[in-house]
Length: 120
Image (cartoon, rainbow, N blue to C red; front, side, top):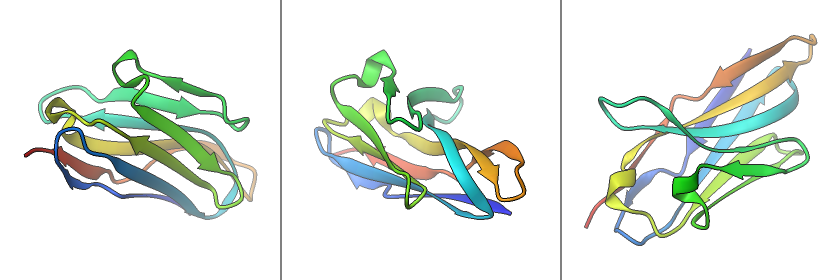
């Protein structure tokens, strides 16, 4: 069984920073692409950023220059550094990853989400 767990969310003032972590554990052989999404209540989940196994990153236009995605392939962990956060970015942030298990089955997994609240 594979588990993805996000952490690092919380309350931050406008202009502040948070670093989210996404850790894969369990029957993990290889973690391929890692993605971060966010969802505001009543709205569709939107892709924020992604990173492949070679650490090539892509970003949604609305976070370019403020967010940085990274990964540690040894720890099977992804990160999202978020700077200069805005109140409109209050949302639940989800990690999503393509994972090959030790029994050589590949699937896409989701974490449970971590709440980020940007407010003064």
